[in-house]
Image (cartoon, rainbow, N blue to C red; front, top):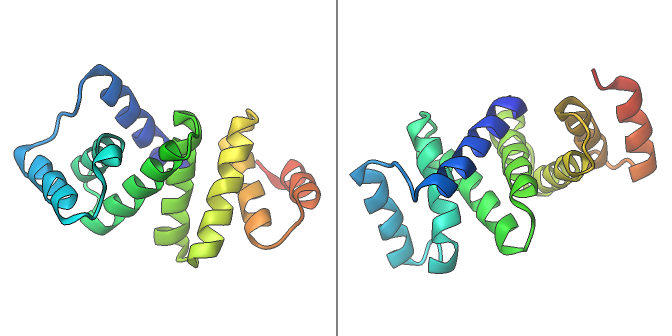
Length: 151
């Protein structure tokens, strides 16, 4: 699942670079309404919008698309690289909506996954490492655990 979401996020980022978005009129209206209501601020609208659009086009419901897009836009706003933001958002989405994790666990998992990918580790390694960190392991113990058990 992490591979699929990372692929989706990568496609969204590539689409953003090629053109603004390829959304339907309804998605654009929804994004403009979110900006007007103050749900998202204008400075994050492009980063938020491209991921939201692709997630909706892939069949994701609005609540999940919003959470995924918000995590991505927050990472970019914090100055993280696009690759980091993509993995962070995908891992955060998995933790929240598939695992059903708490907010704190989901953020710890997503951050650990993104750091592992930034260190050029595999997605399987990143996921295993992320689980260990989110469950309270020290970085050293999580690293040893992931090296031993990641497929």
